[in-house]
Length: 218
Image (cartoon, rainbow, N blue to C red; front, top):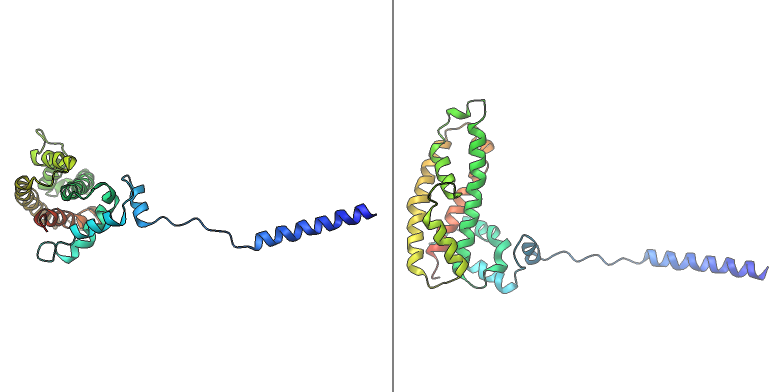
């Protein structure tokens, strides 16, 4: 009888301990910081100093980069913030790579639109497709300025100011001017924002590149 009573007491004690443990709040896994989340996107996690460096690069002043583009600049480059290592040129290179990625997305949308049976082939898309193809490296020979940007960004040589002046002219004459003509052509397409959603990013992406190059010495 005593054994049975002891066993019963032990069972009650175990139930009470278990209930007490379950009632205690369990520690939650910490949420990743924005810098860690950025690092998860492919680059190393960014330190607070790296994030501050990016903020300064993306905000060289309203006379260089309009305020409406500052947020896009920071957000689009945040996943790579940990890889800049204080190099202004690497920031420029990353912005150009984002621009290329946007052109690649736009090119896919343009080709899909052109191939539709609902009259897509009748739209004037040649300028847009030619520009996007060149920016994606499909043209032969490939764009020499794009190759130069990538080479300089890989080196991180912030002293290559003369080359940046050439890149600024390339952005102005070969990218922005042609994109304006492309934009004029596609504005005539009904439901263009639905058919070509990447168009909504292009001006911000181009202006980010301009601002980073023109504000290089800031």
